[in-house]
Length: 379
Image (cartoon, rainbow, N blue to C red; front, top):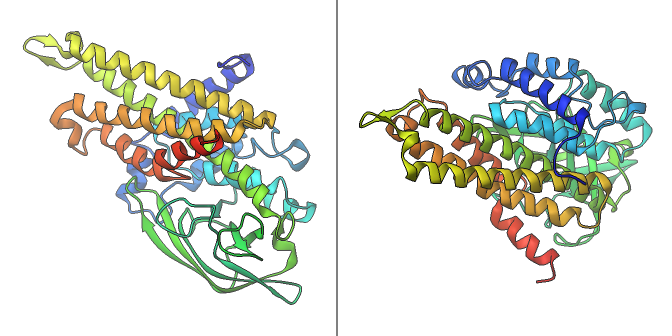
């Protein structure tokens, strides 16, 4: 498949670009909620507007009230979210949670999907149990209790955890902490007794939680998929999230690069525009090529994910690792080429660096995914 968008996808990109540029701009959203120390870190009014545009239900099937689109289309929205640093729960709700709920039974889909499509609800996922992304180890226990389960343990850095109306939680129902099998996914409502959140503000001003499950009682309907058979669903959900995070990273890199190039065309030193200096031109050209390579590999990863290819996992990690390197280069070059003013809060370039740092860690940093590429390639 070609590594560019078809006509329908191009129209979607134009629509998403205009919407995020006008409604999701840094001054209107990120700075606004940061300066007010917002407990959610994002605006619910914007989330409702995204629902009205159809964005929130992009990955929800038409039978369940969504648009029935794929990861390629979701990535188009995510790239514009990254380009404008728009704070929203799109990645956790409309990508990660929506992907997991595809595997839920009818009653669970009827309970949770309408609120997602309408923008009335926000969802999140609780997977990691430490400072780093290590989904291979699931230690939190889910023990049989009557007709349901009792969850006990802690999940760390649950993005939008305190704001979420429901958490999709990976817990162990059998086996040891590092066993591949024996993992089950649960849909845990926010009002579940024994659920406690410790909120933390991340470097990019988004909100996450350390979430404790102290004997949280759930009925059997909370199970997504099969008991002990959640690993396959978890892997698909994480792959969608990683490809989506890569797309948002491409947007962060593109936004930082565009801002930097504009600055090179305006700033003068020694009576000349600094963009006329060959050394800076070479650096800008190198950055452009790196960002375009990152965009191409991310489109490929999304296409393979949508097609169910056996190489989809490999390409998802290739994309996550490559985008981390490209976006890291973009924000570093951006701050440096802006000079001293790039270190001030007055200029937006610093926000791109902060978002890049948080996004790189989400669902695995470049070292985790570089190692994963090696393992999946037989090394």
